[in-house]
Length: 74
Image (cartoon, rainbow, N blue to C red; front, side, top):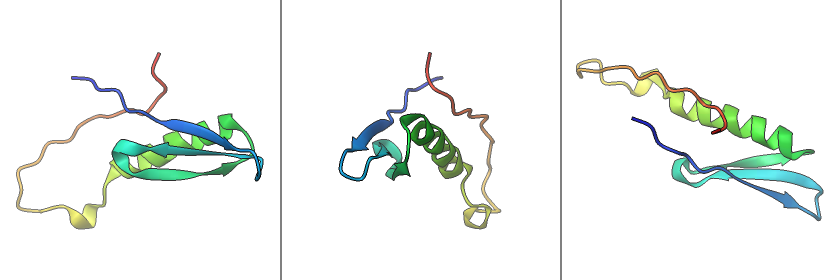
């Protein structure tokens, strides 16, 4: 199974920097000098969000792990 995740990038002309948002994951960030930097920071933010917090895991639940990679779509 595969899905596509939308990441949006926009330039703040006044501050002269780039920002990003990932609506499906409620991620907003940026303030980087270049769009490339914003894209890299966005990928890192998505990967961090998908890691989860082990302290929130239910130790009694039956669980499986999923191998998820974060990379720009072709």
